Amino acid sequence: MQVRPTIVFSVLLIAGCDAFYGVESRTTLSGPVDVRCINGALASVPDTGAVTYQRSENGPTEIMPKQRKVLTVSHHWLYGEGGADILEIIQGPDGWSFRNSRSRMGVAVPHAEMARFVPLMQQVNEAIEMQCGLPVARLKAEPVGETKSQEL
Image (cartoon, rainbow, N blue to C red; front, side, top):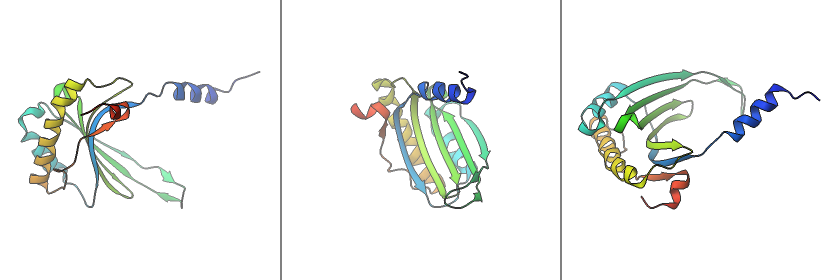
């Protein structure tokens, strides 16, 4: 009996998938985002430390509900303690999404680390709202994954 490589890859992929754990704030946005403004807002918060920006594009064909070409543009900023915090703004075919988080795959983020991150996340969100006009200052910190059983 011959095992197809795609089956082996699929099993390994599924077996290797771990959940994310941590804390985040997220929302959908109604309009375009000025990346330069976000850069300035992050720079205005002293505790963000070194900030790294990365942009990527993905343009596959979506088949359902109808065939269409879609373009997804992802903007990622790494900041905070060792670049462990991620601000992510994604422009997809159905709008914009905002996510500010500290999370890890397969490993819980220690409670003390989350307690340090949440005030920084709120400062970053407030700076973005004040300087860029995006309604993100009042977003609540929400647990991710198994963190949901812990209190933030």
